[in-house]
Image (cartoon, rainbow, N blue to C red; front, side, top):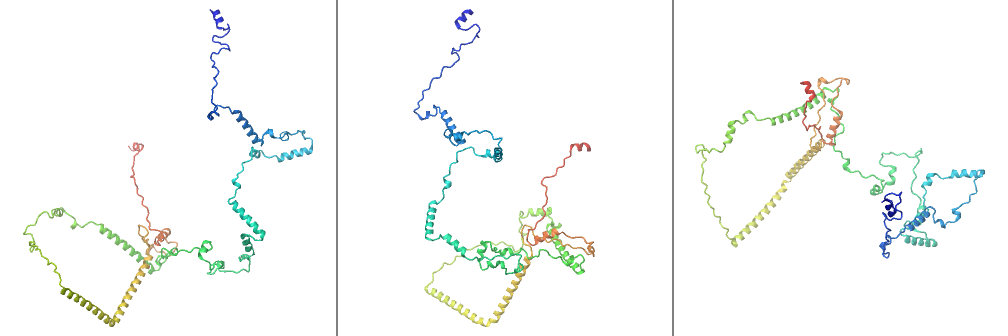
Length: 462
């Protein structure tokens, strides 16, 4: 059986069970069939054509142009090869040349930063173009023709005239010149302002040689009160008896006014008296008011009710006036107008005899107007001394800093300070209407404080 297998299968006695000869085609694919492609169509050119050799050639050409500058085949032998004449170590001059080459050798960083490409950069044509080149060319040609005739251009003529013109600018004097003139810096006439005299104010403002006019509203102060008010003589550390009593009286009047304000508030907030407090009886009487009808006996005498009988009054209808009546009414109207004119004329004639009384009335009227004007001016001056209303709060005068009679001392060493400089300046700003009156912000806790007893503390206390 084994002999038959070896002779028929063609497998040697030492071969594997599944061994195949090299000529067997088991497990190999057959040669691919050649595709038939229509090359007449453009879409199949790149897809089914092998251009790798052309691309490699073009890459090689570009590399040579980038590194060498052109194709190596086009370069001469002298540029590609050089003659080796041996080393010059024994020659002193050659050794000097070698050292000089080492000294002039560029740095490595400079070699790295040098461009590798030998291809020059493309020329930017637009960078060499000039706007209005034709116009400038014609202008240049025209100027050349005029120069040949001896006529200079306008710009050159103006420059020559400016050079020939004498300079009117005055040279400043040196500061270290002892003979130079002195002037008052704050005087009305300043020699430094002499070149600017007589020139337009608008020109001076635009050229920044003159100051802009300050608005009048910026010169006005918000208040005529002084910044620092002098204290009263009674506030001194050792005042006289009269001045101290005057200041005490002033402080007393301020306290009396405050007391009156508090009393008025308490009086308004105070409830009704005992005799005006509503009781159960008065409340019941008010509730029953109008519900119980009054009898005839309770009515007051003379309150008899009379029936109202309205009779329709027939108004007479307007009758048409006759021509005679109209004529009489017209004559009466003309007569009344004539009488009024005559009365007016008589009054005007009689007014001539009343000139003295009229003059006295005019004088009294003018005196009254003058008195009112003076009163308005005084009121205006007094109002200027008062602070203006700038915010929701009104200005309140600070408390008068004063010492009592038993607190006065005759020495500065034992004097106790009264008031505060910061508060005084702050109140002065408010009084002069520079800032609005303010009050200290009140802290209000939004959330209630919750006290929690910790367990450890509870165990100790328990």
